[in-house]
Image (tube, rainbow, N blue to C red):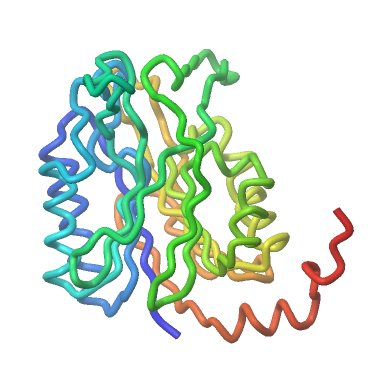
Length: 274
């Protein structure tokens, strides 16, 4: 059993403020005893999409190194929900049009355990007038990632991936017992779908789900708004922690025996026909 923490942020175009706030909350979680801390999607920047490519760094760039060093200093497993990762084209040149939206998992020694590139891209006209086309500036990943750690097997995903249950089934087939869904869910979709989708993924996979989220207004025009409500959900679909509104933390104990007990009581993987 271990204590997990989800960090809730309100990131903007002020990268330094975003990183400093994330570090402050990560340190706070570690002081409270968290062995695993996760931050939301777009931990470094959240604003007009075209800036993501300009700010993209290599997977071992300065921001990644900062958080790797922090994981090492605090002795924690640390998931940085996502950063803009520089994309290298087949010829070796840097892609100036698109980057990857990449989640990074560091171990308590600061080593990078795994990286996941967001697979499903949010190209939608959201009710209320907000149009988002992630594919204009982000190139999709194509790999299902389940990381073997001392805390358990951690399946990695990002935000819009949540709507595609086949991804989470693939993670479970690779042995996942904890699923991470760092997100910047829009206010419009979040208020109706966020809790339901996360609980559904937990129930159907019989996994703990950790979902650190962005919250609040992210740009001066007030068009980019996130729902918040960072959640930790157990394998029965019970919400163990809900941050609600505002920057801060939610924390809960992750008990592997709870996962085993749920899977013994309803052995869906033994019953699957398709």
